[in-house]
Amino acid sequence: MNEILIRDAVLGDLPVLLQFEEELIEAERPFDPTIRDGKIHYYDLQSYIESKEVKVVVAEDKGTIVSSGYALSRPARNYLDHENYAYLGFMYTLPGYRGKGINNLIIEELKAWAYQNNLHEIRLTVYEDNIPALKAYAKAGFKKHIVEMRLTFH
Image (cartoon, rainbow, N blue to C red; front, side, top):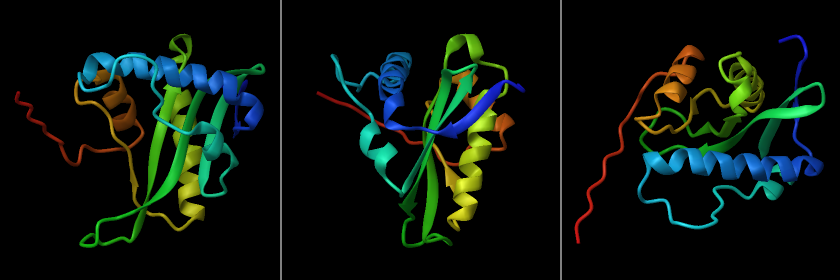
């Protein structure tokens, strides 16, 4: 992992990050039948990169971006013991780089940002059937907290 560099994303990274977003969406479609068909976006990556309120980071291996993630502050529900929390998203690693601890390096960088911004609660969402992601987040110290359930009818 010595050659892996974690750095803030810049606008010049946008083409690669938009490709990561497409790959992330395609990977998640099998877990979520409610994702619309066709080209969609989860994030406004350009505004996230430009914002002082969002920390977008990438991992580089010898100048090639291989992983990404972001953290942003979200307001907590009024009945919780914290006012805001850090929400992590856009956690993507190229397939050939998975299982090498890169996602954990991204998470550590985002945790440091959360701490610097006085956010002592960190949350993320993951599909229940996405076992590799669940294992990676558990390895990074996350615990299952709540399950969102849904019902559809016609």
